[in-house]
Image (cartoon, rainbow, N blue to C red; front, side, top):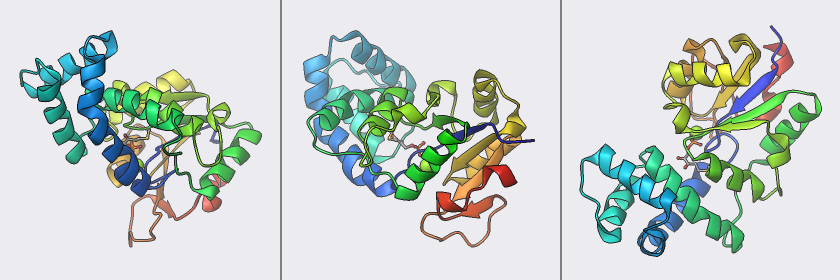
Length: 228
Ligand SMILES: CSCCC(=O)C(=O)COP(=O)(O)O
Ligand SMILES: [Mg+2]
């Protein structure tokens, strides 16, 4: 069946792991307590903190205790929805102040532009919140890439290593699973997508994975959705 839609991961696929781990995560880590102190009563913040308290079983009744838990989660690279919501809110200021722009691989930008021109529908699925994804693509080193995308999915659709998440996303995209190609650098995510019937391609940016069950490429240049 012809591929009609491409669903892509961000970190390690479209942009470098280094940008996320060495720029975005430290920024959120450094700003967390100040941000929580300033926005403690904002409904979105209060709701994310309440969810973090529920997930952890900890009492988070002031910005310092909440920041301590959330900073621990950043260090552990937890893909927890409340943390991802708060990171997205914090990163907004960094992008808007021009403190950083999102790293994107040139081949990924070219590939996404080419597929968009060819009429494929493009979607993002990342552990980063949908707001964080829009900031990432809206403030990339290649400019505003948001016009390329038809939609965004995050952990509110489920975890990236669970097949049901891909089933839910496929239902929302509204094309057959065999007409969707999922791109990721994480084999467990690709396994889950394949279990839901999607096509998969592994991005091995460092050319470090000797053997994979999935079609493996090091650059978007080698992805041919028409030949799958
Ligand atoms: C939206 S950029 C930040 C991505 C992020 O927070 C993260 O945890 C990376 O997850 P991904 O699913 O894109 O590998
Ligand atoms: Mg990734």
